Length: 381
Image: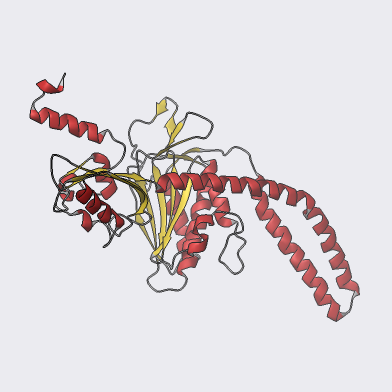
């Protein structure tokens, strides 16, 4: 059907379909700064419907003096399109860590109107960082295997010699011999923890209800290290099962909640929030193949502690990175390894207002093919 025989309403409908087919948020901004038109992706991006967006100005969503507003003004003045890369539009309404590429173009038929297309970079960069985390974990795997073989055997000899010396030396030197024994035991314990990384056996997985796992971890935390902290839930009860090893996911969330509790410390009003959601459309390519993996299952652990120091945020999942006085720096590296073995990714978003660990994982696929609907499992099933 050619455009010349389409009615005006049909042309508008076709145009709407075409804009919605674009996989990036697209908005139109009028000469007063209001948003009269958005595509479906933009509704997800701004977390509001098109009707609600039409009642707001673009400036309502970004901080005062945002470079995005400056770009819009430039396009209006020059009447020429502009591309800008890595623009930070983070705000309370859009969320933290909103780094985007922006294309702004004038609408020649409507003076003062511009069209803006956003391309989110944060997810692509998070996937890249996750691949780096997995590479670091593989390095630790080789190191752990070498340590287990080359260090543990000599350490057992050193420990045995120290115990013998303890029985024959003076009281003053006996304390030094005991110190050798204790430090040897500490090194052996560290090597034992690292040996977990050298376990490359396939993960035994089966369909699991994430809410049952989180409820179990919450009960453990509230009866132990987090008894003084409020733990709240924000669950999507319609989530399908996740294909996972239950015990390993318990280990992952127990580690994350313990870290959150330690970050909060004894601060009054401490709160940990556990949330689950279904995020369709998050897909990435598997290196070396043409396969595209969907990661629609989102699980978050958020705390209102002081946040992670900015100088270690980008390497927080690397081995031996820790801010704890007696920490080994292997806990989050192990978490990243487990999540990666499940085909998922994990990322940390942090600011002075708190920290969020976000895990994205694939949903369970039935034998007859991928589950068509979102199976209702409930939070207590």
